[in-house]
Length: 239
Image (tube, rainbow, N blue to C red; front, side):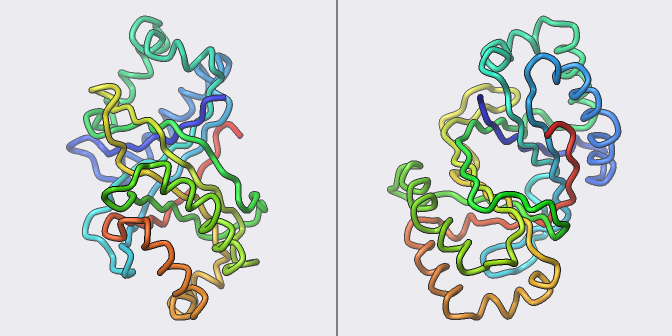
């Protein structure tokens, strides 16, 4: 199974809400209908509403309008470019993407996933995090530190407040117009769902000694200036 996270920006002339609603109401149902039977095995949408940096300051611009984890069979993925450029349904998908998405700013990030806290199914606040490694490190250094140290540590610290926690370790990035690129926008992305009561008290959590110790350790291999935290709405299409 090939696992990926899609990142997208709205096209010019649309608001973020308009573009997100188009994806929800039009593009996602189209993709589910025509790509699902061919080997699209997972397809869920996260729609960022607000973004903050490492210090918890609200960013003036939300960096992404769509975050879309997608799982493909190897056969479908290996023929993906050919499908999108020659198959009538694939061409229709690409043309529909142009109606709401700026393809020049879109990416498909190929990744390994690490399920740290399985999805409880309980409602909560959905957050997607993204970050780059510190200069001088290889992406795998960031991946290994998160897999072996930070992921389990965060699960212990937040305990029952974490209702869902999966990390995506990015090892290849494709721009939707330029194709394969040398550097991904992020090295690690993390999908989490927090209990609403815990989120309401998150400022208190962030002053706890165990949380501060966790953040200090993470800063040893993460470029904290690139960290972005995005609160998202969520829609499942194929699960």
